[in-house]
Length: 307
Length: 303
Image 1 (cartoon, each protein chain N blue to C red):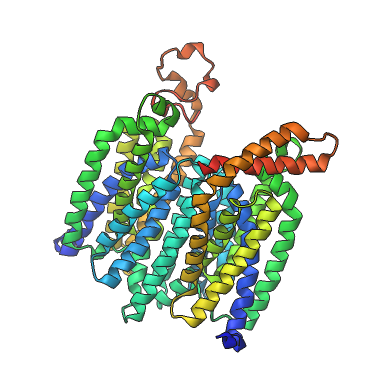
Image 2 (spheres, chains in turn red, yellow):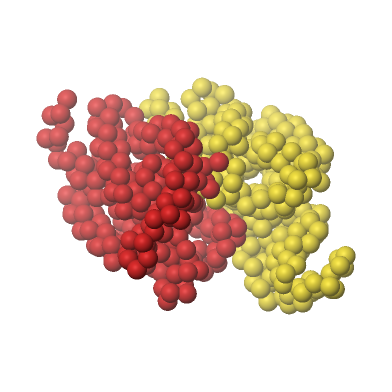
């Protein structure tokens, strides 16, 4: 049963999948708290159109992916300021890109396999080079995210106050979207648009309902993401069905009971937190106050979600 | 040029395309108003699972899509209510639905079918619509529009100002579930024309563009229907008449839709906001304009 691990292609899948899962889980947390779930769905699909264009021109798909996702990320950042408008802007940008995608595909013969491999991924079947490239770029992305961590968190939870404190909120938002776009471009070729979206949203959506500290939520999301990926590859290697199906199903199966049961603990915690904040907050200890504020805001936001 | 109209498949394409464009544009107006664009996207992806599942079972893909999207609409309606956070639930349902779709597709291909079947679901297949599909579309479309006509006023009220509507005794929750069901029907049928990935071109783009150009609900719906019909007919005509290499209908439709939306954004931006101050409204002169954003039926939302 475990002897499948001897095969190089299974090892490659495990390593590349793990790298993508780690970056995706951390990024997904920010996407969720910033209300950008739809953009997380749209960017991989937009990347698919870019890859189709690159294949048509006979250049490396990564170039097409990067060109399309980065310009789409900038467009989303600029056009979609208000949440109401943003979903529509995102959706129409995606439609435009995918319309171009179908145009490229119809001009290019030999059609279906290419679509499927980018949309639905083929994590079992990547080369050693791909793995190295993925690992390296995931590492770089992770470092960039860690550098942006505090200001990004601040501006995600309370953009007005962050702006007043001198955090460049708009620039940060754009930088984050561009970072997502770059990650998408690298990851989509490895795991496919669908699976990347699942790894992006699934773990983080589950953990924001369990833990309320951002750091713990992110760490737990990373662990969950890695578990999903390993289990998915394991099942797929032993079974006949595609990896993306297994991972999407596991992620949904973990999320659903937690989503349904979370009102039991989220409401209580928010109330407890509120009273704690009014009672025992010690002034003058800036960092702990900030942390406490973060925590209250997360749980407040989540209790807003939960009803 | 007009002799293509003799062919059965061309007639079917025009009939189904027009019916669906009208329905999608009308429902789309409320989707834009209620900020439920992402739900429309998710329902389309669920339609993908429905269509591929139906292909395995050997039934019509339209029926498969209708079945699953209606089910999912009930699920989404039951799970999420608020705008904030609802997108997470929708995203989870969406990723699960896509996973199922991939599974069905791979089973279907393993059974020895042509892999292009899935592509036609993803990018639309209006040229393969059958007469039976046209009839199903006609029936479901008229029922949907009929229900929408009956619900028009309360739904508009609940969409523009849910709190006040609730206070006035409008059953907001029930309306929102009924609306999701209508949206499910419209989405499933729009997928037939333009495909899972491009459903926004018929569902959202006409309404979003119309809503930027006029703030009167009825005018906006009318304009949205006209835009939807223009995109569909334009796409079909360009695909038949256009250059020799037969570019896909979906490409033309989505390109026109997106460009129209971008144009409407520009127009709305450059048009003077003073225009709205001239609109008559009770007690208006006693209030400063900027504190009075939302008039009757959301007329002043864009100031």
